[in-house]
Amino acid sequence: MQTKFSEDVIPLSELKVNPGKVVNHVKDTHRPVLVTSRGRGVAVVQGLDDYENNKEELEFVKAIAQGLMEIREGETTDISAVKKQLGL
Image (cartoon, rainbow, N blue to C red; front, side, top):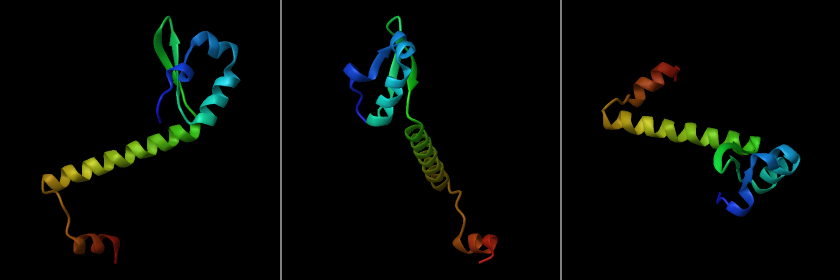
């Protein structure tokens, strides 16, 4: 998801004047829009599906990192113990 600064950075005044256009843009392009005020970034507008997907991916990556850290620290569980816990 590459940001196109000519299309994906808008002033707050543009969002106020035409919010529907901005929402349609993020839905169609699947790229977030950076909203600026006085030349500084103040908010991001992102499609709901894209936001939820990004959040799920982040949680998945965090879980993998946690698991790798536990392996590195020797905090593992034998498969037979897992099966017993699950009643298998």
